Image (cartoon, rainbow, N blue to C red; front, side, top):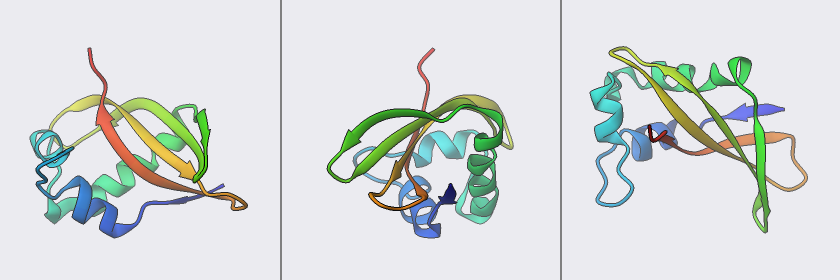
Length: 103
């Protein structure tokens, strides 16, 4: 399986302050900023070798997968879930979103 995290997904979604579904505050608190976005991308990708990828559901757009595991951020290690989609007839998993796991 090929893993894809588009640079714009990191810069214009995860690390950009948004009115709805803002991820940037959480990521800033644990040490990720637009200046070290490449580190965030690398840290997310490292979850594939450490934690199981679990199929969640089939949708008209593709198959959704989740990975639950630790994100070793610059300031703190946290439990997160990343959501990925495999588009139909491809061998590619693309990052959809991430969120902190509730304790």
